[in-house]
Image (cartoon, rainbow, N blue to C red; front, side, top):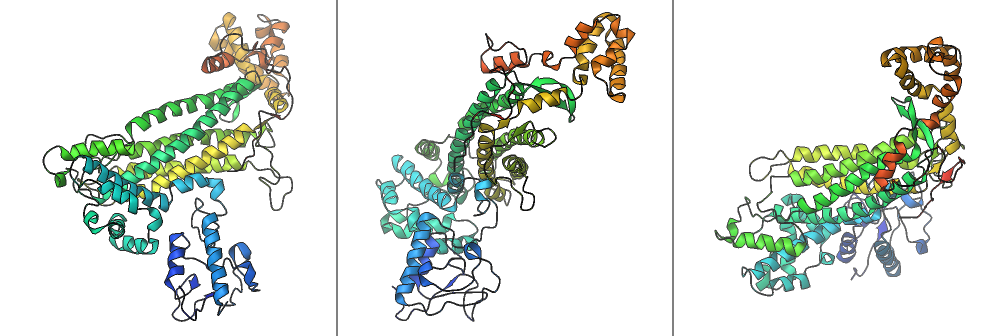
Length: 577
């Protein structure tokens, strides 16, 4: 397996003459290939050393910093080399990062579970993508076999011998860099795995984009399943919140200023309505946008002849893969991809709106809500009192990231002639980024909302903080019955100015105006200036949305439990991913 006199060492600061620029220095092929097969390249850098070797060397990454990491580990014995290989196997099986080398927050060991989830990363990993490329090739052989185009048994042989675990990743990467696409290099490897009489029928009649588009659509199908599960979970949480806070009054704000009283349940119901629409949109997208791709070099299926055999293969291929048949090739009609990614951006926009509301409402000055308490979450390195709304901040950032990906795929729609000369490549970056981002956002939203701490006392205090000014419209509308709307508006406006300049309540200012008291008595003004009595149709609209119009609440401004306690929580869930 190894050379008779193996010389393994883990480099420190720099390579020796003739050594590779990164990673473990070794001459034997099996270890190199093993590392490559498990996504460990550039692998085995100075980030991690087998603890049993007991080398007192500074290391960066999980063991320390890069500073002064110049000591070399040299001349490992056979047993030590085997121990190192065992560590690689263990790390690979448990996906322990040996090199903290991720370049984006989505793949980062540090930030990965803030901006995404492991499930989403796996769904859009290179391994998943290549597995779907193989799946597409096998399904194509099955469809063509059923139509008598390739010999019987071809698909079974491919499925028996072709598996992503056999991939020589280093070779695939090197060939892909040269070719520009992974399909030809993949077919080259698959051809070596199967008997010679079968290898000639791999990729029959297809073109690179057919297989790559199928793999992308299969990934998006899996991604949408994850999105739907989390979307329905967030929707259910918002339904619970809408009902629980149906009658909890608070200040409604426009332009960041007090506008009119609302209930917190109403605010949650507005959020909810958007998510219900997203659920409906998703059903339509699954029916119309997950299309199989099979058109051949220019989309005409000419490689399978002038009969309808190519069309029959495409339809059968769609059935085998659980995708929709597009009727006509969509190599340069990228509206379905754009619709999916823009849909994710729409969901991200709704999440961003919620996040922005929560960020502002959780400010110390308002103190109306707080994200679930977890020790040290949102902590500051210098200010012990800090409790920053981390989930909401991430969601807000992600909503912008998603809109950027939406723009990329819209650009990708502008394709030249029958096969694009570049715009298609935009999707390769946008699709995984968008899906991982939206899954991470939905996960953060479910965490924040399901355990949201609601301070009803603060909501009431803020509602009353302007001493009745928030219900100036109520007084104006009642006074307008006697004076007309325009005159009533001017009268109440002057009263508002007086109240503001003299630190008076609105009722006090109104009672000093003969134009008001000639029509409205003090008891009438007291009722009109009570913000909990001017909630409009908040509860009625909420009830209709929830399908609970009959006998739900009394609309008197009290919550369902009849109190206004502080820091009410509908259920904190601090589960791990």
